Image (cartoon, rainbow, N blue to C red):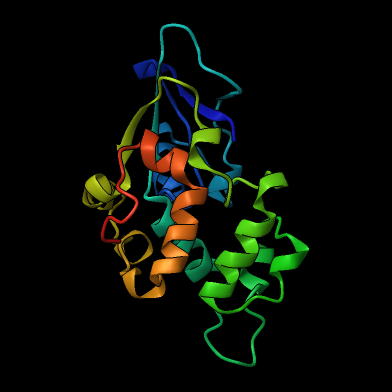
Length: 194
């Protein structure tokens, strides 16, 4: 995803899906006086790479919590008669065909990780692949309440919902291994409480 350029403060914000990017974009659009129907379509000035003399910043999230959030917000079936993937498809997520029949979290993770290597959709790509080297990052788990204050709403259910119970030891090990680069680069522990 392109970085959002903020000339006033010589900053480039690199949005990462499932890391409060919608909340940050809402705050930025409001402060810049942008009008939009969908904040993801707002006319921010963007860049494909770092700009000399500007600071690159991003919000990151524990990759296992991020994966759970993706499932919970776009895949989880809340009743057995609904299509659990409808929300994700409406949101423009490029679901691999292999994932469309997965409904439970364990199966979702296993199937997704098995086909993830050649997929580019930023909703399930590693965070390290979405930000430039040298980015100043803030862990969502540590600044989420500040975002709530800035945005004027409580988004905690999206980024702080307990998901420990969703991961058994084997699934946690599999997902941690897959996202090892994110875990190492952003200072998470493989088995941090989620």
